[in-house]
Image (tube, rainbow, N blue to C red):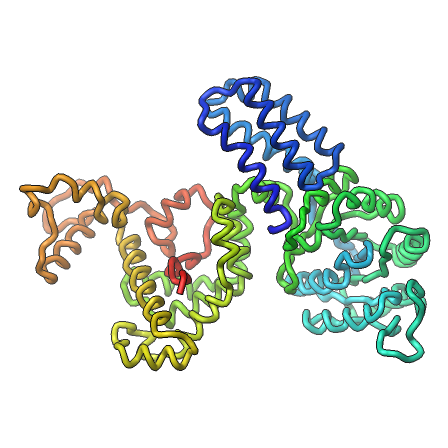
Length: 550
């Protein structure tokens, strides 16, 4: 998440000097904590939170917990991760509270510009996707066009909007009023919406309330009046992650004014320092329930303190990635694609289906950002052009069905036609076909049980294998005859898979182990074998390298 990029980089640099040391001195720990303190302060984390955080880290780092550890540097990182999780709300995080007798009433509160109206649409979309029947309520009758905006957002989300009042409009007419003035009665709108929800059997009501540019008595009185009129099950305080040091002051004011029950972080995709938002849960003792990570309706996720701490420390967030993939991927279709991969029948039609499924997970940058260690490749991530996916899809759609099934028939004239039809260059078409061929070969090699890759060791061919051949160059080498070489490779695959060739065999040390049948063998081992949660069958299968540079 861009709001925490600077903090991630600073913390990663703070740990670099520790990793090369087998034993840590007090000076090493003090120096690291000093860098952590600077990183947090530079990210706008509240001073009181920084002092408490660094004090706990120092106390634990100087104790036996680190001195007795086999890897002291990793233990320090673990301590920082634990304490960061703590200030993000570990122990107070919980799911959304739903009423025993519907409707569940959710009231949104916060300053003007925090993103409440957009968030109302995202929350409605999320609830609808979870099987609920939400209703959005336009109770912000002060901000110009707020009612119209909620109606547009609700239409995009496919969620009905209750808006009996037009509110302040900017297009002229009787509804225009002075800045800060409200038209209509927002309390009556909120109260009437509950009656409508009961009559129409909506099980969730999301009330979008007015904000102010700053905290004042008028704002708090209106929020309290709405709260008292509808008795919400949840009062969510929406806070802009880029607000700076005012985040703590604003959070305290709303906590005292309306006693909110949970926090939602918005605009986490912004490039401003977002550390102040980390202070809210620690200062108020209220959990952060959701995070908004972009403008799209799907750029919205449940907030997990441990996973967010892991992302900030560049340790990735594989669990969230898996959860998102499990929602979007068709398992039967994925297993069929995996079978085609292992049999060498995977075509560009199949790849296009996988590409469309991956796109449903969200922007590629967000997906790649959940992989551990990606902070060191941030420049490459930022340079990645999301339109490359569109160009790849355009190239494939410009092919005939036969060309997609069998890319080998695509000759020079066909490539020129495909390039013209997709609005790309011939070199772009060539690049896609080359990468597809390489990915297919690699995946087939992995699925057949071979551990090695060219230049990386193992049966796939290594630099060390090519050394010292000298006089015995032909010994153990590959035949120059294509048919004979194919027979040799087939025999090697059977040997590695533990299959016998007419001779009695006691098994092979390289015999394939039981695994998720939809995952290539090499990928299964790389992800930690049976110790990892079940991955969606085609996550990554056949996609590697295909979206590289043009």
